[in-house]
Length: 110
Length: 114
Image (cartoon, rainbow over the protein chains, first blue to last red):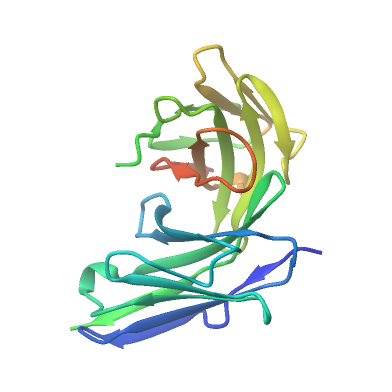
């Protein structure tokens, strides 16, 4: 069946370093992928998305990489800041719904 | 601010009671989605409405129901509440329907059942 999972439940980085958050998916029919950021006590916030006809997409300080061969998605955050501390979810889209992974907690140390 | 609003922000009630959670989607969005988030289950899809009609169902209990009104706001009704229903309930909206659209989330309603 469908599943979206994260390799690491927690990630701790130093301020200024680059962060990489990984996500595996199993539904080869998924063709839309989103990364969300959820700060404590708030709703998930859209960060960046990518469609399966692309393998890379860049935003402001963030890059999403999609490797369809191994069904892997990653979110790279450049020059990580304390404000980036949050839980990050990947989600895969196909047909009528998004399926969310459980999330990775990113902690940025000053 | 995503443009999606939810009320109330917090809700404390007792087992066996019934509550109603309200969501207003972003202006122009036709789809509304409801999710439950608990510590051990992550973000669980409950139900989707598109332009007033139920579009998709996820892991929604029979004690729970939802509807979308002509003005596109939505309500999630939770009845015969149990302790295990304590969770964050999020509403999200998207412009149309389908799993290939960005969903924008509201701030959530934190429900505590005592």
